[in-house]
Each structure stands twice: as C-alpha cells, then as structure tokens.
Image (cartoon, rainbow, N blue to C red):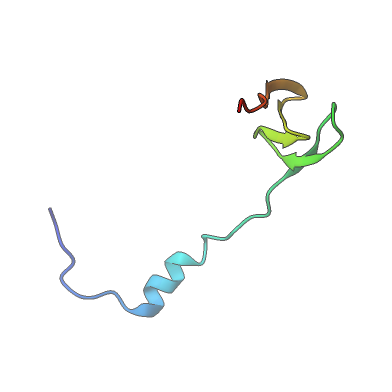
Amino acid sequence: MPNPKRRHSQQRSAKRRTHYKAEAVTLSKDSTTGELHVRHRAHVSEGKLFYKGKLVAEKAPLKA
C-alpha cells in the first residue's frame, strides 16, 4: 500500500472537510395520526407503531 511521504497540513485537511455539512432532517405529517415525524422512518404514536400511515405494530399488554 502506498503511504504519504510527507504530513498533510491542517489547512489542507480542513479544506477537504468543509464539504461535509450536517443537513436538517426532513419532517413529514402522518396522514393517519397527523403527527410530524422523520421521513422514511417508523414512528410511535399513543403506544402504536406507524409506517407510511399504516399501523405496523401495537404494544401488547404486560402479563403479571
């Protein structure tokens, strides 16, 4: 494997890293519950799991 002969300066490394920026997440309003959630992710509303406006899973009651 080739290795660099000399050390890269801090400025050179910083220039390369300037393109990596944090982006704001896109929120969507669920058609069923009306809640805001992160797009393309399942979300919990009132103990139920929803994805694409459909009920995916319901929380089962605990047995004592």
